[in-house]
Length: 78
Image (cartoon, rainbow, N blue to C red):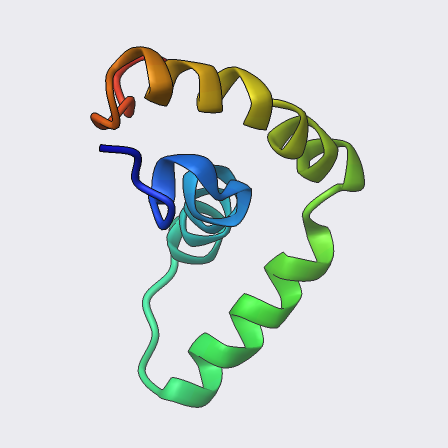
């Protein structure tokens, strides 16, 4: 079974959201939703294009690993 909606195959899910989350919550505590929103916007702007490009370029290798694992998760492969 091949998982067409697998988060293992979406660059935003397997790399970018994780990096954004780590940057937003690193040494910060929020007392309001507005502060959290502003931090997300700030850190999103700081994510470099090279990081995004590398994440996208991993896609083909990740796809091959999912096929090799017959649709299984590959979170520990990379």
